[in-house]
Length: 321
Ligand code: XMP
Image (cartoon, rainbow, N blue to C red; front, side, top):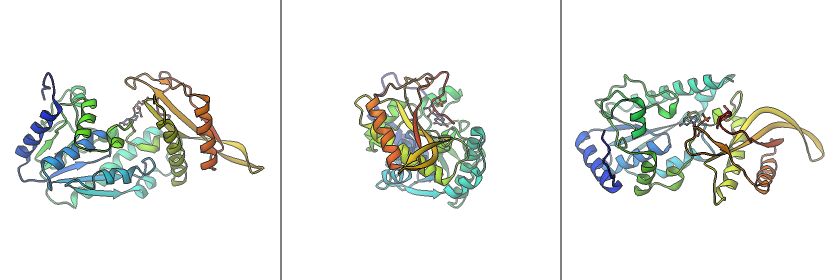
């Protein structure tokens, strides 16, 4: 894939629509939609290029943030595509039971994602093409080239689709774009801001932000606290580049209604960064931190204590895992 010198997004969109129409003809296309920027923009472009010929499988692993699964569905409700949501939380949690190692969690989620996707795809009968939201940096990094059928993009970096899926060809309409251009194209295609300008979110989702074993109860606590962190920091004029909550596996003593309480410690993480390779913790005001902590301990009574992570990267990473 060659990038034009001065890429005009409207021209790029027109060219890709024409190219996809020519490549696919009247055949069907399948896409694994994660709700991330790349797969969402890809789905939106294809629904415009080949209305009625695209099926999107959205494997909802139940590890997303508050209301996120519904938001992804809502964003595609008016698009001309066949949207399949697989509600798979139970099977993911079942596989994650008793698992505390972050690497093992990632591996299990990656494998389970492939299984859930394949099971659903096998019910659909023959589909000629697989679409992927591969973008230009993916191709540069993997040393491959789009359309050769070799580069199967890692789905959320948690595993990648198996290479033996029986497809005639790959459709990769974003392969000439950088990330900021993909976002701009998403806006051009009418996708909502919360999908187009989302912060990075790990493919294994909240499983890497619940430290230790992942359970429904812990996910619920984290989701509520995380929604408060995002709600408060969203209001800033100058927002950090990424902010979220982490449910640590430490317990601490507190006092609630005059009685001793014992509950988990919740950490707030917010970073400022250019490239996520290095990051500085965000110097949030004490007023803001107080508001966040007060809201969390009031609205999520299970949480006994809130701490703010003041570690930069390096030596810390952004995620706690
Ligand atoms: P770390 O924790 O390594 O994270 O400092 C750097 C950035 O990468 C994000 N991250 C991921 N993004 N799939 C992704 O697409 C993943 O599996 C994944 N894990 C971490 C992290 O949120 C941060 O922005």
